[in-house]
Image (cartoon, rainbow, N blue to C red; front, top):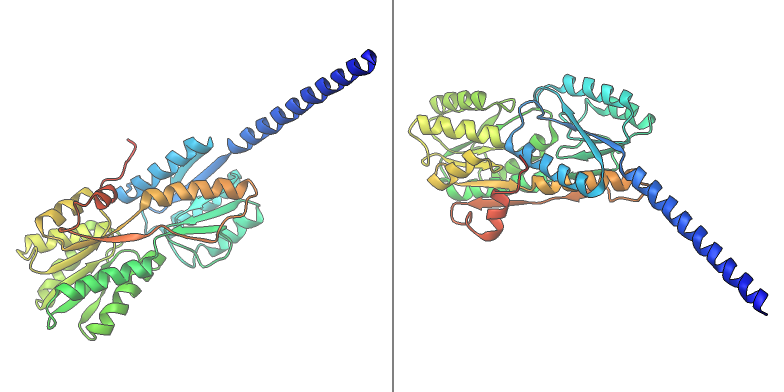
Length: 328
């Protein structure tokens, strides 16, 4: 009986040790898997706006949590579509485990994504989408809805007899396309024939400034302008201010740079549509890790947007949106 009891104890001990070793091996392999390389390809890499700095902060925060090595790259400007295609080709050849992509163009990047997919590299698409089902998930603002918010606000605050204009950024970018459609969907319903046109500044403040200076010269009856991103908003506001029209010609913008917040406080901007770039970056990295680890991920995540005015900018919720944490 004692011999049997001793043998049983030895057997249980051996099984316990083997189980512990297997568990350690599994955890070690899991940790090794989580330490893989993910490349982030941004639209605005060389001279990032505050929006992209906050996106990067979200990615970096998630990368620390998931023990992932992240590398950043991108073209020299958001409008350099060929440059982004070239960089994607180089990234593909370096064979990362996953790519997080903010696409500069809706259609032109599709052939490159097909090559990346054939190489077995998973793609997570953030901010602006591509015309492809290859990305495992698309994470962004619902830009059509955000455009509607801007269009409604502009319509509400501008005299019914006034003309309106839209200052966009990069032609062919899905964020620009969808925001413009959202604005026009509302304005054409209630202000049909009042929009003099949509003008593109190539995501350049100086060009947005020149566009608005020319517009106000050619159409002095313009009473309101919708600007669809940070640089178009800041450039347009500077032009209206220099013309002595700041606050008189109503302006609804996008994003929440320090300049835009200052203009909002001074009444030079009447409202701005604020996105949630930190969430976009954080969820982009988190979803990339989940996907490359073999987990199922949802195909679409809307990170949301909020219309902020001078009257609502000091609420606790909006202060968090206007002043997100940015790692230096």
